[in-house]
Length: 119
Image 1 (cartoon, rainbow, N blue to C red):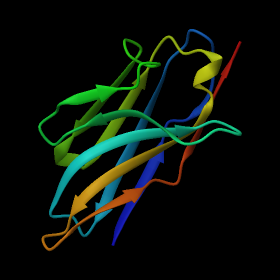
Image 2: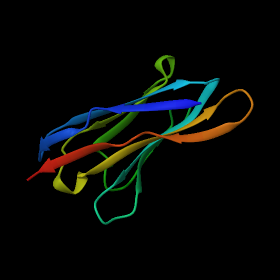
Image 3: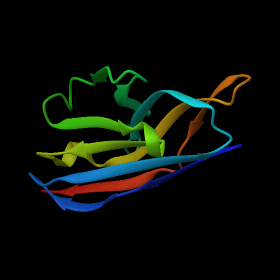
């Protein structure tokens, strides 16, 4: 089994910054892609950013230039640095990680962390 523990959410004023972390532990041989999603009230879950095992990143248009995804492979952790935040960034943020246990690759979800941006 694999466990993902998220941290770093909270309340921030518009224009401010937050940094999310998601640490994976358990039966891990290697980690492939890592990603952050978010889900605002009454809306579908949407992809925010992805990072491959080689460090290639992609972002949703709504966060390009403001958010930065990164990873620490030694600690099996993915980060999301969020700058110049606005109220439209308010959502529950989830990490999603593809883990190879030496036999198969499965994806896992974090428990979600609330991010609220006040105007």
